[in-house]
Length: 415
Ligand code: HAM
Image (cartoon, rainbow, N blue to C red; front, side, top):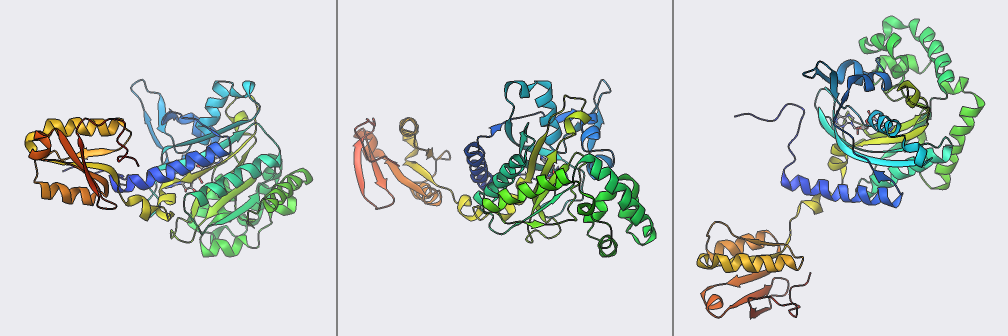
């Protein structure tokens, strides 16, 4: 028998309910912040990510699912959504109508990584992008939103780490200083960091390898070469976060793995998922649109792994429980009557289910109990012959007989 592909996951109904509870919270928080949903395709031209995330990033160099289609166009399954959203914003000139675009999204992404707890090859991201504003208040709004969203999803212990990468000029200068320093210790660096030294040296700063950490602790810091404008921008972001009561730690080693970032970068971390310590992360991208050959625009956003939210959420236990408003328990010869009554109940906006296996009254009652039915409607021979039905309120045990044609004057069936 075939099974699902390694690194993918079937979300079965019990877990689906947890997802729905979390998705409801996400939608609510995004609309409270006046963010609107955008949906982009799962497949894109491979070039979009090579230009945006960068050839040196792990995502592009090692993890993308790329394939030629039947006309030999190089396509890929999207590894993230910031670049697709930027593409759509530029393609539909959305900034012309509105100087501040507040967008959110949710959907599957694909990265060929080694699967482990909280890490899959097909995973789902929820994210937001605030495109247009250049000022620190946009950075702060997005971080406050992420903070509120994670809390609303029932994740109670997490830490926010924040850093600035400065402008692209600052970063270029810093990159040279860093490569010069690390080159003196090249042979002591881990194999991964040796590989990154010339392709993506900033990533060495957040290496988890102990030998790398000992070397990077002595490396020049980006803050030492930060220009005044970048420094002011960062200080203002922090001061708004202070005013909004969002706690954070400045981590000078936080660099993030995608090339498009400049200025503010941040990550929400947890100690509860082993090696996968990031619940979500994001940052400002002031040059992304230009790298896509689109008219310049600034943006800031974040992405959060839905699977990680689900693993951490305290909503899970509650959401796993089922309940239904009404279950019909009937003698099988009266199936047509039972289905008619079920339709009438549903027309009143109540959920209702009927047995489809011609089971005994006892078995049907047991099932109704398992479903946590609030009401049970009985239709046996006596009820059928008298054109009635008996409705039992399972909360207080009271029951009453009614005409089977439910009319609006019956108040018993209210949620
Ligand atoms: P990212 O840090 O690559 O950023 O991914 C964001 C989040 O997606 C991670 O913190 C993690 O929760 C989740 N994630 C990433 N890879 C996997 C995986 N293999 N399995 C499960 N979850 C995963 C971005 O993607 C940026 N687009 C975020 C952003 C938006 N920056 C600005 N705007």
